Image (cartoon, rainbow, N blue to C red; front, side, top):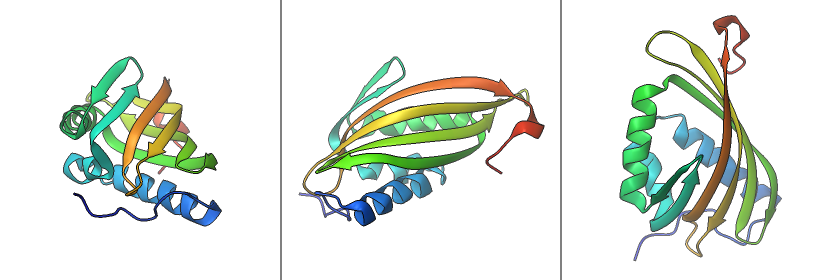
Length: 138
């Protein structure tokens, strides 16, 4: 049995905001080992067209993601919550190996287990190429 990952559901405004900030902070470390620990062993993800099952696949996915997405910077915003679920809007910026910058926009639906681990994450994401001078997340 794993430890509890606070704050725990059911969420109120304060604890929902804390959970979103903790996720933003963790993803901005770009550390797949650390980030994957926020998810259940058997977590289910849909990330764009990719279906990811389990913490180990999350770690592999994030390793590939951050090897490609250089100078990654993310901002998350709570849009709503109820009991053990949240809706989150996000945007992030990164550049590829050639120096082209991109901004990704999306929405995530999250579901947590009783111990505060994310058991489901469904993300819809759109990317667009941007000029370095158009970056917002510096």
